Image (cartoon, rainbow, N blue to C red; front, side, top):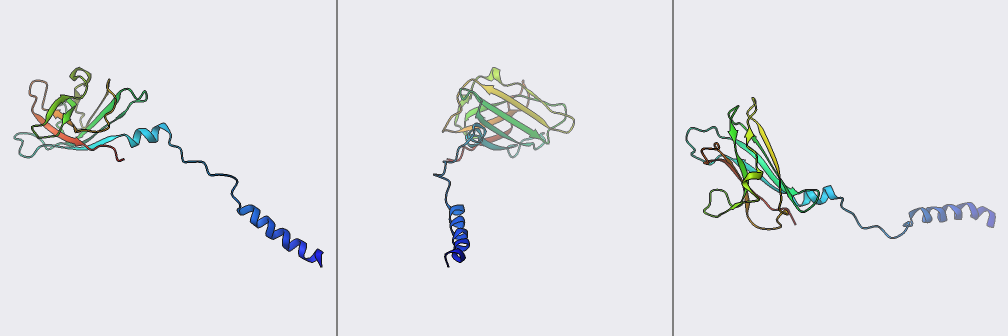
Amino acid sequence: MLTTHFPAMSLVLLSVAACASPGPEQPARMNSLDMQLDARWRGSLASPAGLPDTLPMSGSASMAPAADNSSTVVTVSLAQAAPGGLHPWEARIGRCGMQKDDGVFGSSGEYETMTIDPDGRAMGSVTVSQPTPVSGDYFVAVYASEENRSVVVCGNLAPPSQ
């Protein structure tokens, strides 16, 4: 009788052993890219309403920690701009279109003027020698030209989700 139950009992024991946990579960780990994406500020850019003699441009902007975590990478992309145009830009402390503008994030000299390609697009990127902020108000402003510092495209940056 023992020999007839032995194969069935062996199957039960093997099934239980297969379902057993191999040990305590390891906590989830985030790699540095995940942490950088999680720390990214993002915003959509749009031309202010009622600008005379300008094309309504659009785009996006972001800022995130650089690989060294002691500086910040700020990027901007533009679309629907006049081909061949030259547009200075910068990230600023404050909000678009408000009286609250506490100056450039970093140094104006760190930001290079964007050149609009034949398709009406441009991209800019700069590494600012300041750590990425964890709170506050920030925006990206794109100007008409070096001579005309009127804002033609602007976007508030939303802080990273916590």
